[in-house]
Image (cartoon, rainbow, N blue to C red; front, top):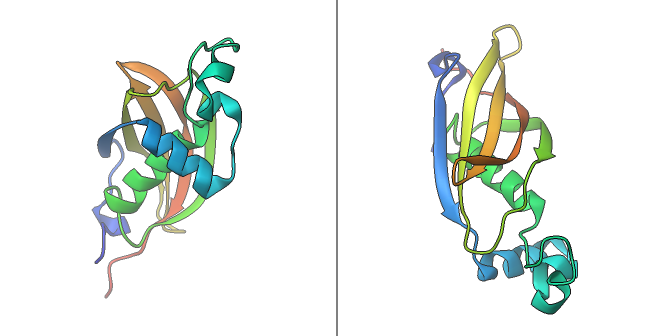
Length: 140
């Protein structure tokens, strides 16, 4: 399965996906990553924090960005080189996260793309940054 080729990309092109962050997602991420911070897993502990409730790991938003890049834009065959990421707001259990990547810049010589990345809940940014990826060229 092959995604888009470098030649298929244009500045401003975008793709998105929406996922609901459930307790099961947060619990699975904790198991997978080893990040068992109680603010993510223990409701009683979370009530003592500024959030007042359990919140999702910030890197779940990062994983959603990776999913859009790896499955939609440009999709299979893309290689992640780097990602800057700022966490703007917490994601709570039950939140619907819309993740969007947009082609910001194309480096024709190197076959690299810079993508604007954003995750939103109810129209408010929860995480944003930029990804730098290598995109396969169309075979001759």
